[in-house]
Image (cartoon, rainbow, N blue to C red):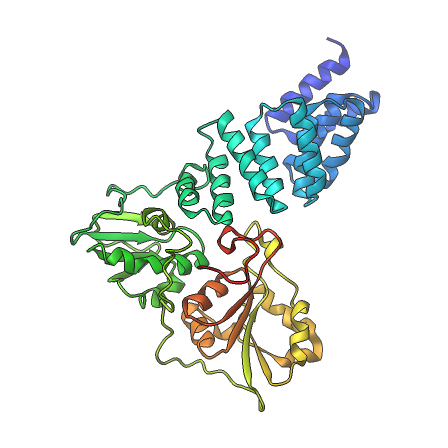
Length: 416
């Protein structure tokens, strides 16, 4: 074996064993001797992408393709790097070129579909996901992405059917209960556990199904996040609420909260809309101060949890709300908690125009008590939107171009 080929084989061995620093060093040494060594260029791009350095990966893939224009895998990897940089048009162009050369990769059809969905090309995205499933029928991520696209299109029955594939995703194992999953049939006095499975907003949105479950004749127990317990307990039809992590009471059957739309065969026309379906505390210590001359009280939230992988697409800079500060008769109240609340300090003299409630909002009962006293909530796509909606309070939701499925597309109102 020639020395360069030998070094490349060793570098690849390091790479595949996870010894990335050694692999990178060898790849670069090879390129010092042979700058046009295609496999070393391509592998350096892959390595950079693996550690999240997509911007650094792009030139390696581009150089690879300059030397080997028909290298399908390099087109796929360059497309993925562009996609991770939110350069969607560039990503789509290279997915198309790569698939024209080799259409047999289900993973590529999946990623191509995600790029198309980012442009709100839902029908094209759905076709890509279906192609991926044709090539690999038992492909949980493709079924899950198909579910999200169908739901965003408004096809709730088929979308929620596909959404059950979420339990096959490696990062989302189902709860391991000995009791069976509920199938939607009559409960006839059985004790049923509804358990929250995702974020605060999801719990607030889908707890509306509890009264429908109760009508099937069961004793309804809800396990949810501790900060939501007091509010969830006000939902009609719920008999008992426990916090996640606490010992569960006896139950006969169980169901994850976001499986309820599937079991009830929900369509856009049959979404439960008995609103409000949660109640703010009857008496609460938190009372809003309104400046003299206030005619309209507005709560604002401009950022979601930074732990959400999609947070950069849904959160805003507080400066976007600055035009509200000069509207006569309007008092603004910040519903923001944790680090984003510190952005109020950047408003300078304007800071006094927004009342910072962050130190008084200890759980969602506090937030509900504030929202109950407001005339309007303006928020990005976060739990505040779902809480305001559950309370029956007018809420304006600021959405990104390709919003979460529950907001659908091209609408001024939400059926939820």
